[in-house]
Image 1 (tube, rainbow, N blue to C red):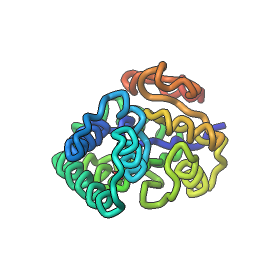
Image 2: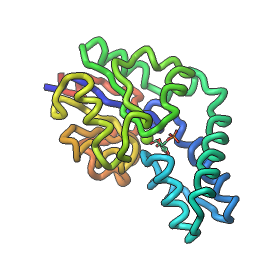
Image 3: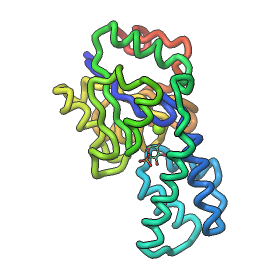
Amino acid sequence: TYKACLFDLDGVLVDTAIYHFQAWKNLGTKFGYALTEEQNELLKGVSRVESLNRILTWANYSATEDQKSTWLIEKNENYLDLISNMNPSEILPGVLDFLNQIKQAGYKIALGSASKNAEIILSKTGLIEWFDLIIDGNKVTKSKPDPEVFLKGASGLGILPTECIVFEDAQAGVEAAKAGNMRAIGIGDVEMLRQADKVIPNFVGIQASELLQF
Ligand code: G6P
Ligand code: MG
């Protein structure tokens, strides 16, 4: 039986995916590159450094380490600016109701996010109070699709990976969950998230007891 739900943050609980996309697009203009939505899909769940490396590869641009560090800071400053006014209204539809259902059912709730800004976002939106454990980009060394972030979630909660259900909007995140031996529920488009055990478009009207079979 399942004992915990591990949630990705960006694109699952809140729609910060649009802010990341905006900030990367803005950065791309510095080296004359226009990032597309299809490419952005491949950046979801991927760490900041790894995202920049991928973009530079697509742009066929070889930057010095100094240039890269500067751009990483600039991207994050822009991103922090974009999220500075976030508030509880930006929690995605159906999320609070779903969290309430699983909490009532006795599930542990943890975060498994690559973002180093996760705590700021959870605080600004008030989501932080729901979480028993937060594993974010400051606590891991390997980017999804490596399962590290979710495995640390399971061990931090003192349960087995096979007792965890992961909620993910990113291909890399679904892969990470499966690599960690967990059940993966994709949030979004079934075409994009083929490796997930099940895909739902969002949390609106979702009955936790049906979805998680308790
Ligand atoms: C999440 C997002 C990615 C983002 C990464 C790092 O996984 O899906 O788009 O690049 O976190 O976020 P950060 O806030 O640390 O730059
Ligand atoms: Mg995500």
